[in-house]
Length: 122
Image: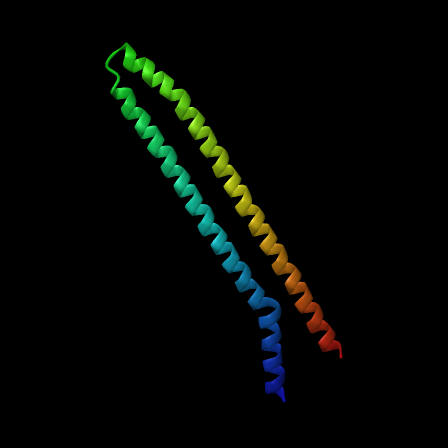
């Protein structure tokens, strides 16, 4: 009889605590992976743009080259501003998705706990 109680307790711990904890940990790891990947891509793009501009600066040989460089700076600033805006929107969307999935997990866990409590009281 005590074996049955131990198995039932183990099953309840798995259903109410360990299972949800593993699911939340997996969600957190997936989110972290996506966030780090997005940050890496953004850093790479900003670094590439900076290095390109540094090389262009060193290629200036005359007034026309300087004028072209300055004109190109406006374009680069605009492109980087748009890139930054897009990157920020991507991170906000990832945050919202993470929160929504976390809330769904909590709701599901509350329902499961409520059912388990109801069954235990019978």
